[in-house]
Amino acid sequence: KERMLIEKHLRTAMKGNEFFIYYQPQIDMSNGKISGFEALLRWNNKELGFVSPVKFIGIAEETHLIVPIGEWVLKNACSFLKQLHKRGYSDLIMAVNVSILQLMQEDFVDIVQRTLEAEKIDPKCLELEITESVMMESYQAVGDKLKRLKMIGVKIALDDFGQGYSSLSYLKQLPINTLKIDKSFIDSIDSENCNDSITGTIVMIGLKLGLTVIAEGVENQEQLEYLKKHKCHKVQGFLFSKPLPEEAAVNLLANN
Ligand code: C2E
Ligand code: MG
Ligand code: MG
Image (cartoon, rainbow, N blue to C red; front, top):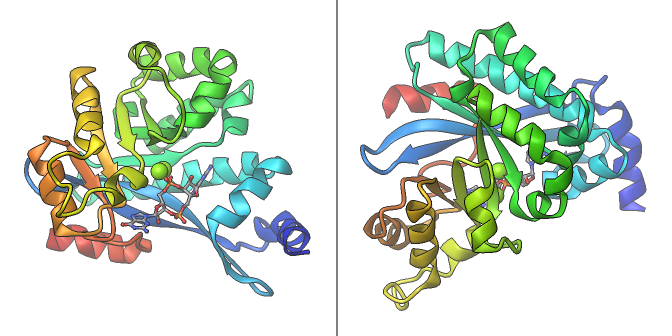
């Protein structure tokens, strides 16, 4: 019943301007500064109230509504990034989650390129996040597009890394720039097993492969210290900030 309700309201959500985007900062460990933001979709419906993306993204995919919604997220996140660049934060990057259904679109690379051109954004300031499991299942179908995007200069991040089943030899060949270590591996860091957690090894693999390594879901100081010790490049999580509306993100930058 809930599923059907969500689907019904999802169909009119775009027209009703019910979507908005929150931005969560990513922190560069080398200088403690905000290096970019991840765009996270939010939905507030009159009848259902706030619905978590965990609940509605899957349904948006099943109904293919994710294609126009994803394009809307890309456009708006790029337009916000341009505003930030204009304010003088010209090195910031924007990470945008993309669904496999968007990547399957014949013209996806063109859409990304057109969006960047419309906002006059350097492609290297955009990072597209693709979950590891999707990348592994659908690489045959979307690998060429990812290579084209990477050639243009757009960055590709492997999201939720460690949840899927990448073989390490395969990982070396993927057209990716960034490994985003899944929150479950960050959760498993605690003061007791700080020295022998597998998480450090995962960071090391990323570093050895020449990738940017980012940890997601960092919630406490112990996790941060551990990641610092293992030379993880960037962190993102509630310890620094929850995802924020535009204005709050701008304020955070000003105080960073
Ligand atoms: P994700 O891309 O892995 O995003 C990270 C999720 O972890 C976000 O949940 C974020 O709010 C949450 N998070 C960040 N730091 C912490 C922390 O320290 N502790 C905890 N407990 N959680 C933290 P959110 O915003 O609910 O998004 C869930 C998922 O929905 C995302 O996972 C992503 O897969 C998907 N999603 C969100 N926005 C979009 C979008 O625009 N397009 C697509 N295709 N998927 C999206
Ligand atoms: Mg993500
Ligand atoms: Mg993730």
